Length: 349
Ligand SMILES: *Cc1c(COP(=O)(O)O)cnc(C)c1O
Image: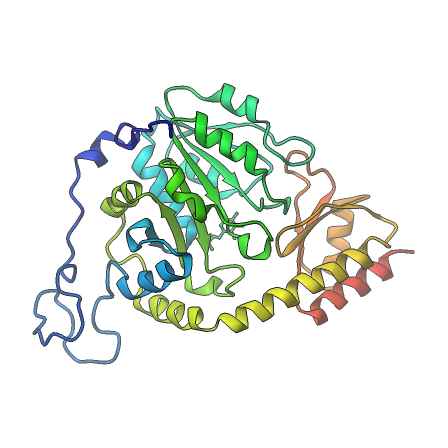
């Protein structure tokens, strides 16, 4: 493997930092009878009066077992959005460094680049929504720190070619972030399986989509121990609250529910594809490895507004490059999908 020096990528101020040691860091083992007078909490037990475990040990041990990795390869955050933000703050020097994103893709990368005053070098995907690898490699300079690959991609729904990602990982001396928010809906294997092969890889997953837990805000970052240790230095100590940790542990126990819902959603996606293809103003349905469909229609603004009149909210993606006249539609319950289908059929006159 080609050598990547992670320490050279870290912002100098972060490199110098020691992790913040919170009041509960050293003594969060349960079982021991300790008297906790260290964190200025209210002593009356209502179930929630104590600070949560800042290292989320119980939850991480379950996730580590599930993914067959070590707990030291895991960072948890308040949604993937927080993990993304930590990446910018650890590696990108405001006003100096740059990142590369591959539109059409998830909007948060650009929002965070702007927030952190980091130039975003956009390299459009090709017509099949795959990476133009040569063009990406040509954009890299010594200040390029992160390349964001979303796979399956939002809003296009497709898996990004393994060969293309492999080439970025091999030839880029910065960090490749693979956002796998929708990986549970896909047949392809997660890049988490290849963590040991690449020192400059970070994989993001979330409880917000397949796990059905968008409201608890829990995102996961998987990377080398070295990268995780850097992110741990700057994360707020109690970034994953106690309620979220409990709910996530419960959710992980309900594997059967997850699998049932995944098959349900996949089946109903196929039904939607079949029926929508028969609607005359639907020009194209893009192949989807996710729980949504990107469809091309005759006039997306018009169709979007007509659906609204039926009380149905979809996402108009027409202002995204390569996505003229497209709508992004989430696969719902069979009942919700039928409402959508009926609306499309009524509009098809
Ligand atoms: C929905 C989504 C996420 C999830 O973000 P959370 O903060 O974990 O809810 C991340 N990335 C992409 C591409 C998404 O579509």
